[in-house]
Image (cartoon, rainbow, N blue to C red; front, side, top):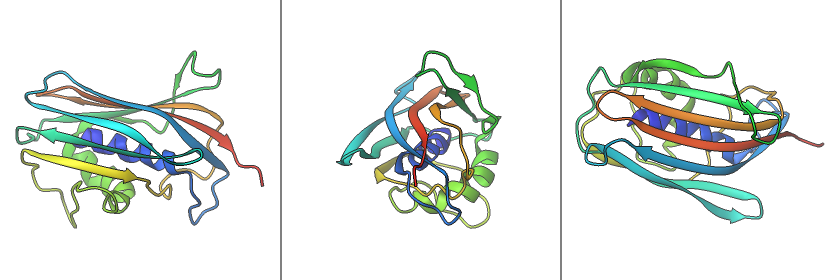
Length: 184
């Protein structure tokens, strides 16, 4: 469940472009998103882009879990970059290796994504540690999240964000984002 949250947040961050306090040298536009599940009776969802203006998109959708998420549920975030228009991709160092969902949520999500997710979703908000996640439906509507947690410089190219869960169900969220340098 929350593995998808992590990816959604990362991708939404890249969707919005926007200026952060540290002047990012790059901008981006989302090209596509998709979500799949290995078992719709356990968990699943839907994601789509909404055009807000010329070249401006937001992400909306939902993610549901029909079961409580166990401690052994794991997630992995893989970030790839292509500099040849998407023909080939290479793994980037920003990836998050396979780890427990609650570990990922209590670190990466909490430190980088949570405050932005509060503005457009009912994704978890917590102070210390995330409590066990019970069966429920999460929705996100017109998400445009802050890029504050991302590097000031990112190389041009097409980035593929892939969030995968392991354990009781395999959920996969994928987004393609095109990054280019700003012209001042």
